[in-house]
Length: 75
View 1 (cartoon, helix red, strand yellow):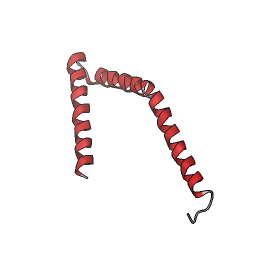
View 2: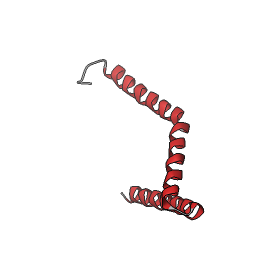
View 3: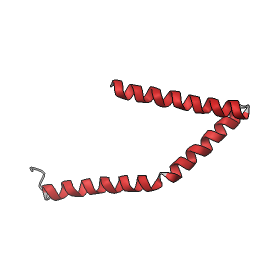
View 4: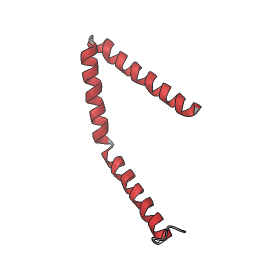
């Protein structure tokens, strides 16, 4: 639980630091938020191949489990 809490705190501090940087650079919180939105949108597009491969791994695990049980729920 401490690890998860530490990760959440680290991500929150990182987010606030980046937002603060854009705020200082652009001079307004509105333009800083717009810049953050733009960057987060690009991250989603650049990680699309990773998202697809993770979906493929999930499908593979599901197929492996189905093959291992051969449709018999008792195994």
